[in-house]
Length: 377
Image (cartoon, rainbow, N blue to C red; front, side, top):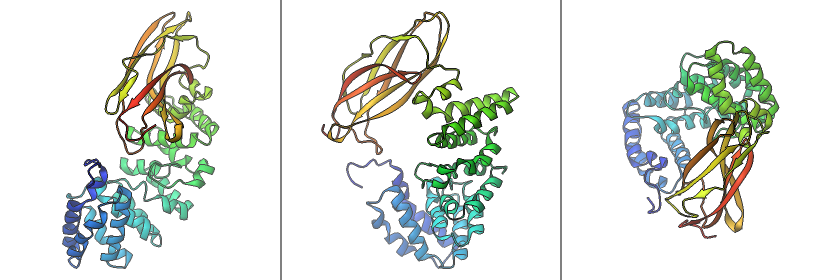
């Protein structure tokens, strides 16, 4: 392991100890398995990322297991049932199925359905959706009615147009109506775990087809007669429209009874310090004054302009508060934002900008400086 690597990074779950456990379990199911050769591959994983390790392990399993797919799949499914394996331990197995199981769709889909109860098969289903869209969609539609919450969630999550870590499903980006029957089955699901996936799925669609989403949610509102259904749907609405709300889309805001026409004054942002070191917080506060003689619903976010290479910047919007402010009232808001090194963002020393956004509109801003990043301005 490199000195600057995070020892808690997920990729280390698929390291030497994992290979030892995996080899012991496979051998108990398939005595011909070459444990010694399997363990020798440990050194080839050392400099690989998590997804690269998954792919490498998938191909090693292909080399050492029977070449007959159905025989190998039986061994892997028995292996997956071991209590010694959990969550990410099973990713190489789902990856094996998605990569080598395209010519055995029925048994592969059924296997992924069982595996998703132990570790999500949301990434593994995507090649099947690309290669045989209608058959796989029909299978997932049935899964959306399954008694198991993990299977129902898989139906929505696996068919998302823009799933993180997964291939984009361009056919669904172009035509989102293809997956709407799955969402229809899950919109009032009793499990928040499932409804969260529905909201994420809708959020994906909203990036390309906001009007389709507005029509869909309006139809669902008409169907939500009971208080229980209204509460479930309101949760989906808040989370599915989050990107459009951050952009200040008037229709999206109207779903939350928020208007782009408001009368608010924000007193200048106060920074505890305009110099922030990596590993420390940017601490800020500001006062919101209502200038209207009636209550106003406000969605308050903050935006940071992150400095990038060659002086460029990129903006990220962060959730802050949803509040209702009374007539001529004032509210003090405080926030701490931690700056720490993460794998998904490079920090650069230099000037950054903080902005306060209310109902999609930037109201006030402040400049601060970052020190101690690994990259120079």
